Length: 341
Length: 60
Image (cartoon, rainbow over all chains, first blue to last red):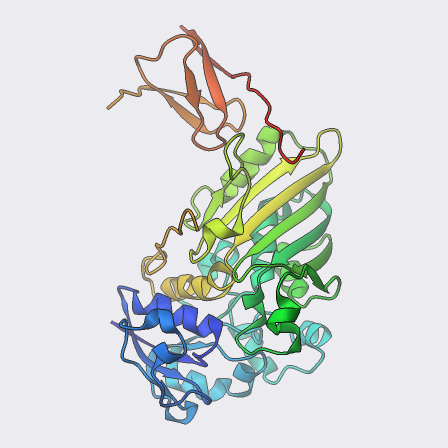
């Protein structure tokens, strides 16, 4: 069995990761750290795990050696201690934003501060299997993925790789769990309930990951918080270099995603769910992708839906780990979701 | 289980649509990928078209 530990396991992404790893057929969870929750049973913080494990949180100072170490700390923390973490584990997967970008200059531009460990950036593989599968196989270090970036990247990847995009105007509608487990004035229930909040109409940091993975075209991005706990719905208005027939778009997406275990094409002519819908992928590692042509124009609307804590965080991290260790890529990730939910 | 020795491309999305050997003329077959209702318009040679459908009011 692979021995895995989680640093910073009291947050939502850490809890989701723990949920997945406890059911993973090839992994045994050794330690879960938390400064604030040290000594408490993990089910005290993640009540869905009651009866599934007797693990207690340990302080980070007690972290021991393991085969794969997951870092689920707030942004900026992993980079400060990466030398120590790398000495404890042969393989490291960081779910935060510290090692997602390839160069320190881009990091500083988007995150507003110098990178604490720039020498480590080239050692990490961006942890989205759909763009970096071969690089992840056998890799020692993988970054996590931005949840919004993942929804956008997977909605646009076939078009971007096909050189079809002139520019794209993209909006995501996101759930409250993207904001993490720590509350504040903006997440206080009377303030958060019922909002449709334009929290990042411009300047969202995940745009750097989109441009890194999708390549060179004009991309404009906005994010809106809506009344969801989990979920991202991406609506991407793509202005094509040349108009494409419906069947050409189908062919492009099918060629790109036909063998992908966690990307499903959803574009139904009838029924209740004709396009991707976040609630149908809640708790799953799926990204559902669809599209609609705007007849007579060069606009194509690409749509995707993910669970931000799964495909947008812990699910992709486990998928990346499976590739790094040569395991079945889908191991531990087979939950098909709920309907109705 | 139906025998499916023939396949045709969906005229809507180009997915591979299996056609059972005992399929009848004018039979309606759904495409598993795009959900289009497809009508068998010929058996020899096998031809298929998107069946006419009644539009629904969505968000009217």
